[in-house]
Each structure stands twice: as C-alpha cells, then as structure tokens.
Length: 144
Image (tube, rainbow, N blue to C red; front, side, top):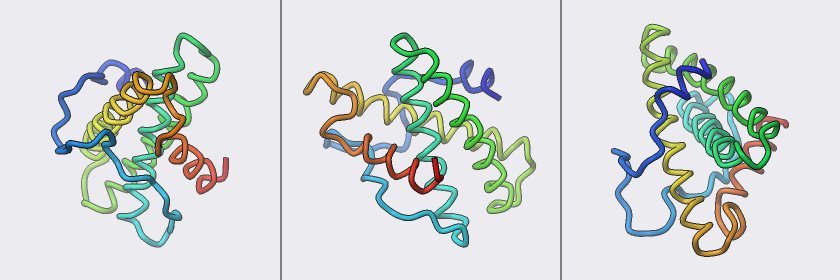
C-alpha cells in the first residue's frame, strides 16, 4: 500500500479538480465526523489522509520518524477510504483502491501547494493557515 502510494504520487501543480485564485485550495475542515454519513465520512477521512501524507512528505528529511508515523497512519486511512468507496459506489475493492488513491494523491498535492505557498510567505508550513487546524480536527475526530 505505501509503496503503491509513493510510486504514484505526483507532487506538482497539475491537479484536475482545483479552480481558484486564492492561496488556499481547501476550506478549513471544521466539521465533526458523523459515522452515519458515509459520503461525509469519505470526504473527511480522505482529507485527513491527504493532510497526513502531505505532512509526512514535508517532514521526510527533518524528522524521519515523525514522517513515517504520519505516512503509516495516512496509509491506514487510505485503506479505510477505499472500503467506504466500495460501499458508496458499489465498486470492486481494486477499483475503489485505485480511485481513492488517485483522489488522495490529488488532495495531498493541494495541501503541499498550500504548505509551500505559506512557507514562502511566513517561513512556516502550518502557522497562519487552515492546515494546522485540519490536522488538529483530524486528530480530535479520529481520537488520536
């Protein structure tokens, strides 16, 4: 799973589902996770997986152990997103994993784009952005 993600991740600006003129690719993830809402859970957990993968990528050289922790948990969430996708779209497990991986790669690229833009502006990947709040929201709602 991790190898599949690492081999296919594309950390550049070619994202198909973004159209914006502002600095942020996402609105803050400030909702509660509702296990009864499968579509909402799919989106919420996808965002959490992506923000953890983005954090892992940016921490690779500075703190490899912390980076690995983020990556391992993001991979686990990716698998959960694929399971939700099987249920939501009546897909095979293989197809759901491909679709979920593609979506989370795209979301990860968007987070990294915002993190890098914030670094240029402030010298921090997280301070003054929604990204740190997203990590806290994910940690809280996923009970970490």
